[in-house]
Image 1 (spheres, rainbow, N blue to C red):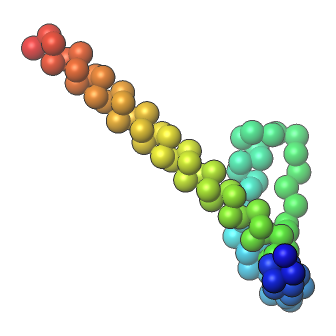
Image 2 (image 1 turned 45 degrees about the vertical axis):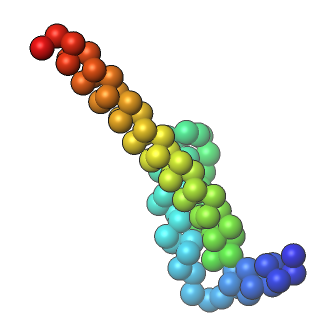
Image 3 (image 1 turned 90 degrees about the horizontal axis):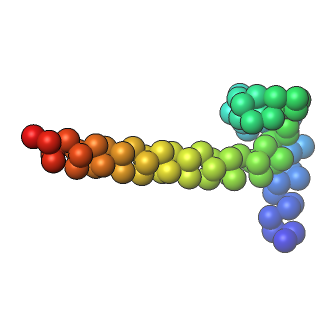
Length: 85
């Protein structure tokens, strides 16, 4: 556990905050859509990195689900149209 936390604490204390600025627009948009009353803080590098990984996983899962739904609807549409030609 210390092998993970020590680099994150060091990254969080770095003077140049990059990951927080990358995460902020994504987190702000998701909070605005799902939880309108929540204020989105600008996070440090380490904290933002810990939040960014599950956020990207959630976005990838949503993309895969929408892509599967599109394929299903398209196949169903072609199946129904094919019957009436």
